[in-house]
Image 1: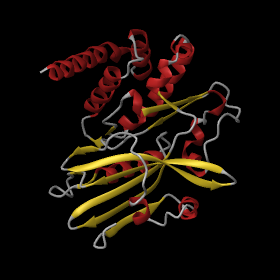
Image 2 (image 1 turned 90 degrees about the vertical axis):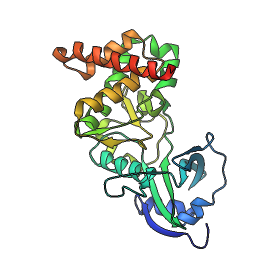
Image 3 (image 1 turned 45 degrees about the vertical axis):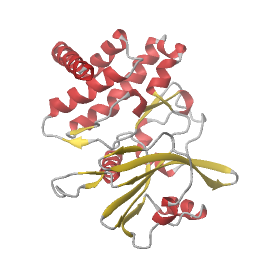
Image 4 (image 1 turned 30 degrees about the vertical axis):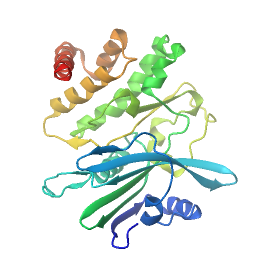
Length: 288
């Protein structure tokens, strides 16, 4: 970290996580900024800045490893009403929404750390989230033949997706990037019951082990584009049209199940038409 870089915000989720970081010689922003690890994918270069993510293994004691994802960005800002000129880091917006939704009992990824620093007027930000061990993305889940051919299991998974997404919309928030790759699923004995979501960040994920049976646990990730809106129908249209358009495993049968689970019968036909129009409009724009 440059000598003139000034840390302006730093938050650990709790003392346990702070201790885990210190155990791995990660005392704060500077140590996290200088971590050297390969990017999961090439960093995004937009908004006149850069933003990327890498996976990093934390030693948790007794030989156990707790992987985390370290998201790091420079001058990657979004403008807000309070900050209309310089904006705020998009990771700050993501961190705030993760915390709000988690406190409301909505199943999202666990944010363990957020830090922000300024150097020569340029914003730098770091967001660390716990890796979802034992989960697969919705895209990966549908790619397994045994899952797609089991209508009961498909219905259970899509019910959990709706149970996660609908309360977000009810709060006047849109996910903004609701693709199958941003919805993580865990089924069977390893799934966390919905009532335990608020406390889940306090213990490590373990494969199998509990008596949840055929339970389904869904977690939403990548809330960097989440935003509020007074137009509730618009939030629903944007998120669900993205989900239907960008999730290969959602065929005609799966789409009907999703619509059945999200909408009451009197509204279902109207929303089917609206979502299809939104998908077709997006496809036409892509072809231009």
